Image (cartoon, rainbow, N blue to C red; front, top):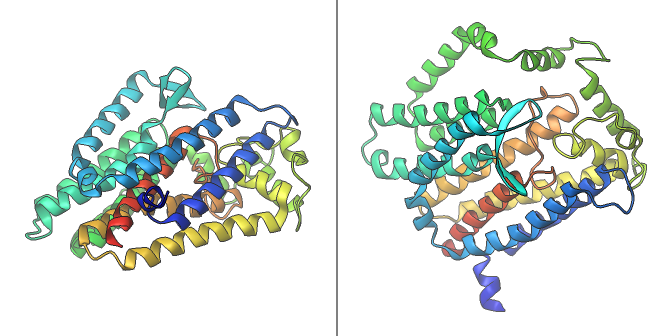
Length: 359
């Protein structure tokens, strides 16, 4: 038994992760709105939960250098899947983002959040770390932007922004020259009007809603219902399965992007505080553990893998309360979605592989 536990690496991280995932299953069950009836979404999430535990154990037992060595190849395969998704992917919620596998659907963009850091660090260690060259940095920037653009094309603006922001932050930590950063920032400002014309109409409306425009009955409806659900929860909440905004179907996407609103309505400020505290514990645990990683490639890999997790937590909570634009980003571990859940478990598995060997 001690051998099995030792192979898991940081047990505290796994426990926090499993607690959040169980909370997610409970909220997905509640989102169905019918007491005693387990929806197909809840069933799939439960399957994802138990299979995710196996994923963590398997990856924690592997040598992370082996995983990293295959990083570039794995990411290029994911890019092919992303292109295939644009051509023959399953369409839902206005986007072509999934590849059907019978009972399940895989969302390649969630896997890209994992494979992109693997690709970047593998290339960085092989080509840049000793003799950094301008062309090598341009290649990595090109990989980040190409991956993000394919995902935004689906369209999936939320995942595309996570890929773009986490990839560029990782390159900055790797030592991306400042003159390249300044050039990219100035170019982004100059091209902002052109980028606005590329956005879909509904994406433009979401940005305008964030800036205070739009009708409460139309463009602002989703955000306003989310605020009503959060505010009506009070300190202790209305009680499990008793959320009126959810039960009366006023709150759209209540099991995915806006599941945090269900949490606030039914479990109140107390439940929200508990969940945010667990997220803080996880992030703090990451940072404390990363300090003791003495290999630069291992540190950069872990940092790159955890960035999408942190950004997703901040963006999801920010958008459901109106502090950030609504861009369709799920809440890690809690929102419904097998690809998203498995992606988080894969991330923890690889990080645990690094931590287990560092200790």
